[in-house]
Every structure is written in C-alpha cells, then in structure tokens.
Length: 193
Image 1 (cartoon, rainbow, N blue to C red):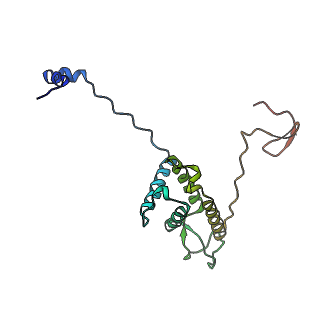
Image 2: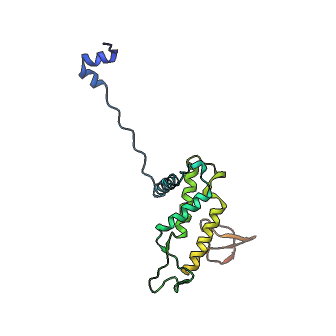
Image 3: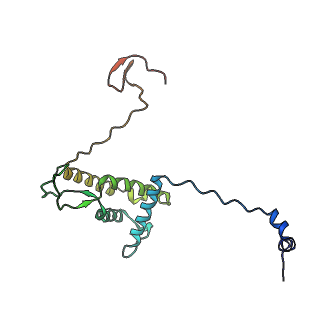
C-alpha cells in the first residue's frame, strides 16, 4: 500500500492531526436579490422556457423581435386587465357598471416593464445592445399600440410623465430672474447650493 506522508501522520496520531486542522468556515452567502432582480431572473427563465417549447425549439442567438412579439401575445392569456372590444356597451368607460364577455389581457404597463427587464437581462447574459431583440423598434411600436388601444377601450388617458426638476432649486429664466417651483418669477440672485 502506498501512503502519502500526510496520511501516515494522520493515521499515527489522529487527535493531533485533527486538532491542527480546523475546518474552513462555509463561504458567505450572497446577499438576497432585490425584488427587481428576482423578477428579472424569473422573466428571463420564463422567456427561455417559452423559446425551448417552440417547435422547433429556438436558441437564444436565433431569437429575434418576432419571437418577442409572439411571447407578448402568448402572455395575454394570463392577463387580468379587462379590455373592452369595440362592440361592447362598456367600451371607453373607465368604471363599467356590470360584467361583460370582453377578454382579459396583460396591461400595457406590465408588458412595458417586462420588456425593460428582459432587455437588461439579455445584455447581462452576453447579448449585444445592437442585436437586442427586446430593444427593436417593432417592440416599441407594439407597446405603443397596446397602450393606445387599452386606453381607448378602458376610457383611460395615459399622459406622459413630466420630467422632475432637480432638487427644488429655482430655475433661471432670464438674467437675474428665477422661477421657483410654485411658478413665481422673482428678481433675485440664485441661492447658494
């Protein structure tokens, strides 16, 4: 039998060998993922599963914007947002007084957020921004159409969010004049930051 020197030392005096060898502490666990990161991972896995279930299966490098559009349409069957059809008596009413047979769809805001997460995940998994199918113009057009269609059908006006100004500091209008958040223009010097 062949014994290495360490095996021989350990077999001769097991208490000494074990006392000089302290077990290493387990590596620290990574911090828990944020809600956004967890959702992004779930969405990425779901999209990957969708591609694998296609006949024939589609590999990620062969995925294009058409696969993404099909995926978004596929998700509609799991939606929870009532979207009234043109012939429905509740079309255009934000709070319909009764039930109807119109379909449930994915809300455009959910689809928009999903595309944002998948777009980021694609690049995190080595995809190029130039070839990112989630950033394709056709996807933006589709989302805009869904937004307009759902807005009309549900009687909801979607407005663009105004960009927030800095930290509440007055904004310079003309030389020596500053407009404060309340809209009042005053002749004064800009306060020091």
